[in-house]
Length: 268
Image 1 (cartoon, rainbow, N blue to C red):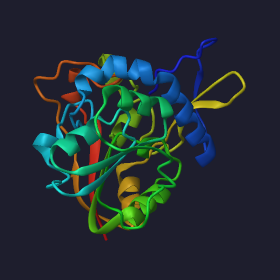
Image 2: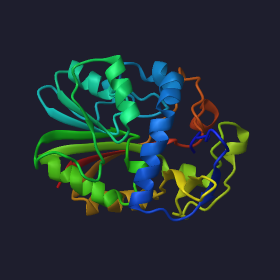
Image 3: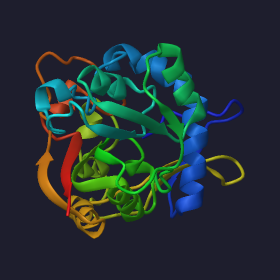
Image 4: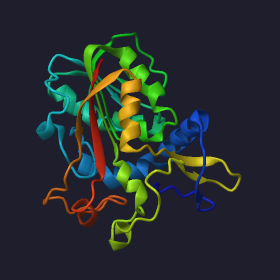
């Protein structure tokens, strides 16, 4: 799961409940602490102005899951250093890049560009109703929130009628396997149906990283409960050109089990 290490001790990994406030606090802190390392390690793969849906390397330039974006207002949630938003701007869209982490947005400023940056929580989007034509998120926010339906309803609120909401998350089947890129990550080690969040906590028991599990069925029901219609579910296959390992993602595992799920939704 995460690669967080406190300056004094390694956090304890466990499975326990974690609510909205604790999850949000942990996510903001983790990304602020780890943004530099993340960008140093993955920045070359992500590029400065490339829209990548996940570690497999599926590119929006090829996938076109957002549809034609030229002339559209687009919100990117969990934008990090705003690489995807810069790509959107190059296609003629009017993107806004939103992230919970101040340090991630500082990296967006470092890279540069004219994309507006907003520091805010995905569960309380600071925009007027019907402000955007498209909302997207590549591994941003959704895996880390305790109440995804609340986020989806906020996304629906800021979308115009008929607007598209597309987001990628760790494929739910991965929760049944150890988060290892090698052969040890190919044997089922936990129940796919155990929705207990993965938590890393410090010596005081405070969460420093939280990730929430939903099954595929849960995700579909959340999408519908949020006011959307699911129009596609994409499970990217591992391409021959991609030899990298990224956490538990690897060519070995990617050729056998899916690592990413992308939900393509439209405002109902």
